[in-house]
Length: 201
Image (cartoon, rainbow, N blue to C red; front, side, top):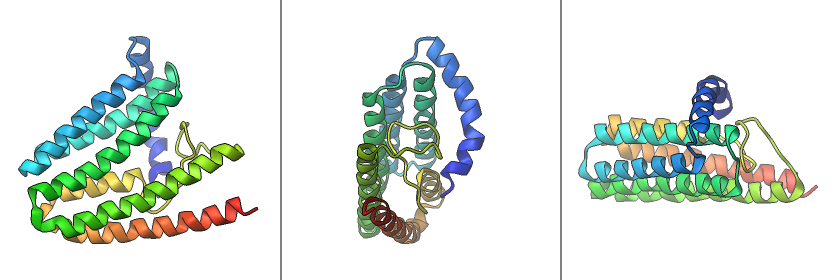
């Protein structure tokens, strides 16, 4: 819901930094993999209950996620880069929730519901993108992307806010998980409706 508005703020500085890194020979895929490795560090820290350290790794991972696209635009955009960006993002998101529950097994049920909800948003997002590509449907509302980015109540910005919240207030995780999971299902329902309206014509 907030991604398109946020892009107007974060894209200019990311673009400047991406241009410099591209001119230095840094590749977008290298940033993608580095960001994912840092994200895996967040998983370990969450399992150990080090929420401050995990939050730092989460924010660095998200910085890398924004920066790899900026570098690609000033270097070489590739299908592999777009693929890695999407796959590693979904693994990272689910991993944050899973490893939080590893550290707090009593939160397993709300964590499972949240990951279940991520499956709904992810599947509705990727299926729409695949058919949009087949029909030549494009959008730049969330910046220049390798695939069609379909909006909703729970996009990247809201998910980052969720992760920040659970690191700052881990005891409230169950509340965050149930509420955010419910919003994910609203997003999934809206996306299915949009797909029906778009593809049946």
